[in-house]
Image 1 (cartoon, rainbow, N blue to C red):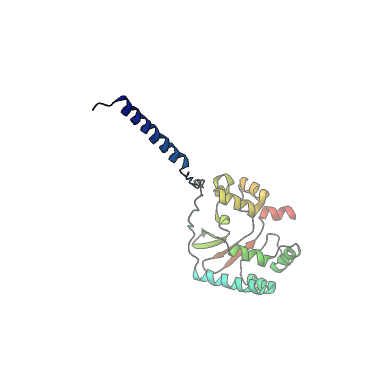
Image 2: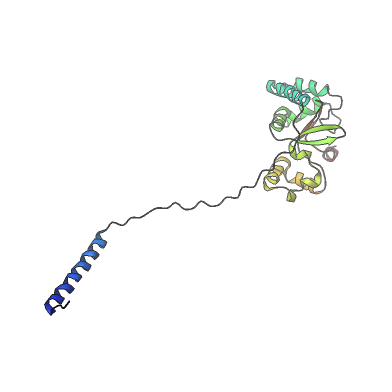
Length: 207
């Protein structure tokens, strides 16, 4: 097909018009901005180890119920009678009677009933002592000294241990001592074994 110079000029002009119109449409087109939420930071959650403690026996549960009933009544006298009824119960290493010992603690602001309630509300561990199973609160108190060295614990257990025994307690553990904080134990046959807040070494230091 042959174009004259006039036809060719008209075609070029039309092309310029189309290009110009297309540019205007692009200029007038609304700009769509999408807001995309930032990806959440990855949080590493330390796994909580499953408890391997044995289920509490019926006899031990009954003893716990007795203790809790006394705590609910806030009766130190009943608390002492319950402890005195246990033939081998230990509340201290200073040779004081349960009543005298707990009375003295109360005067210093340490309420044995409140403290014991807090222990029983927390996790427990178990130890085999001969043929018996001892349920021990807190669970960390059931571990061997070598297992309690802070550097061998998880971050969560290490922080909890520091809260329970303080820096001085951590030093005692590093020296090879057993758990030095407040603790209690009940045997699987229902015997209340001890409720103490010090070690024999600590008791000797105060004498």
